[in-house]
Length: 283
Image (cartoon, rainbow, N blue to C red; front, top):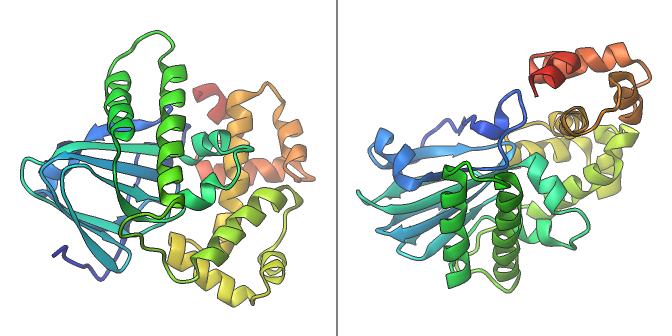
C-alpha cells in the first residue's frame, strides 16, 4: 500500500516557478522515483496537470483517498490540486508529462467541456494512440529540433484530447473528490468573471453556497484558499500578457481591472517575486 502522510506537500516543478515554463515538461518515471526509493509521498501541484503512462512494470497510485493498482498500459490523469502518491516496482518504465496552466488555457479555449472531463483524477487503460503520442512527446521534448514548441503543442493537444474523450466515455477506476462539481463550476466562473474582480462572496452567491463553504472546498481541492485561487487566475493572465504581447504594463494593468498600475505592480511582485518589468525582461 502507498504510505499516507499527515502533511501533504505541494511540490514546485517547472510550471510553478516565477517564470513561464517550457511548453511542457516530460521525464521518465525512473528520473524522480529512483531518488525516493521508487515511492513518492502524497503531494499535489497547484498549477500543473500531469499524465503518467506506465510502459512496463507497475505499482500503486493513491488518488485522494483511493488506491489503485498499476500495470503496463495504465495511464493516470492527475488534474491540478489533486493529492496523489506513487509506489512503483523497481525498474518500472514509462513517462510523466506535465502541463502548466498557461498552456491549458490556450488549448482549452472554445473546445467544449474538455476541461471538465480532464478535472477527474482517474486511472484508465491507454490505447495505442496515447502510448504513441506520449513516446513522441518524450522524444521531441528531449531534442532541440526546429519547430519544437509547435510540435509539442500539437502533441499535447492530441494527448489531452484523447484522454478527455476516454474519461468522458467512462474511465476505469475513476475517482472524483467530494463536491468536485462545485469546484469545477467555481473554476469556470473564475474564467468568466476574473476580469471583473469578483470577490469570494460573489462566486459563493453564484454557486448558492456560503463563502466559508467555498473556501473549504477550494482548500480541499487545491491546497489554496478561494481568495488565493482568484488572485492566481488574475496573475496567470498577467504573466501571459507580459510574455506574449507588446502591451505596456499600464495597459495590462487596466485590462485586468486594476485602476492603479502601481498597485498592480505591487500585487504582481508579491506573486511572482519580481516586478512586471523584470519578469518581461527575463522572458
